[in-house]
Image (tube, rainbow, N blue to C red):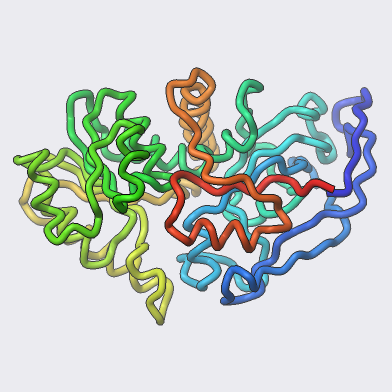
Length: 364
C-alpha cells in the first residue's frame, strides 16, 4: 500500500481529517469464473470518501466460503464480473468524507462489505462501522466479523439455544463452525461437531465431540451421543444431506441452514440450489412435526437499515468482548499478504486448515 499518514487537527466536516499522501490502492480483482490463480492484481488511483463515508487502510480481510462460491459464479447475489471480492474487513480510518466526524480518524473498525475488502484501501459507509477493541490484533478480529456475526445470530437469535441443550455443528473446524462451537460451549451448550479426522483434535480442543463427516452412518454416530436427537443442527452443506440434519432433531428442535456447500461445483444456476433448499425448509415448517427450520441470511432485515445495523453492531460487539477477554480464541488458519490472494484462496479451499485464512497488508 502506497500510503503515509500524519494526523492533523482540522475542523469536523472537512473533506479530509488526515494530512496524508495516498497515491494508489492495490486491489485483487475476480475477472470471471477462474481458478484461484486467475485472480488479478490491479493498482489504480486511491478513492476518496463521499459524504457519510470513510476511507480505511485495510489491516485485514478474510477469505470466506462466499468468495469460494463467487469465483465459481455460484454465490446467490454476487455482482457481475469483474469485481473486487472481500466479504468483510478490519481497517483504520484515514479520512472521512465531507461533513464527517473527525474523531473517527486513527481508530480501528470492522465492517461487513460483501465485496471490496480485498484491497489496501476501502471506502465504507460510516454507519456500517463497528469499533474493534484496541487489545485485539486486527487479523484475529477479522476472523470473527462475518463468522462471529453469523455464529452469534444463528445460535442466539435464530435457534434460541439454552444452557444444557445439545447441538450438532457441521464443519466444526471451519471459520463459522469453530466460532459457533466456542460460543455454544461458553453458553453451557453441549456440542457435537463434524469434521475430517485430521481436524478432530482441534475440534475437541474447542470443546466439541468430534465425528467424521464421512462416516458411513453419520446419523447413527450422532445418536450414540444424543439418543433422542439434538436441539439444533447448524448445516452449511445443504444438498440431500439436509434430510439427515432434519431427521436428527429432537421434538422442539431447530434446523438452521446457512449454505449450499454440497452444490458448489454443480453446473447450472447459482440460485436454483438455494431456492430448492429454502422450498424444502418451508415445506417442513408446514408439517405438524414439532420441529422448526430456518434459512439464515446475514443480510436479512437490510430493508430496515437502522435496525439491521444496530443489531449487527450489538452482536459483533458481544463477540469482540468475548475475544478481548480470552473467553473465545481467534482461529487464524494463516496470515497471507494481499498480493498473494491466489495462494490464500487456494489454501482456504483445500480443506486442510482449521479456522479462517486472513489477508494482511503487503510488506515492501
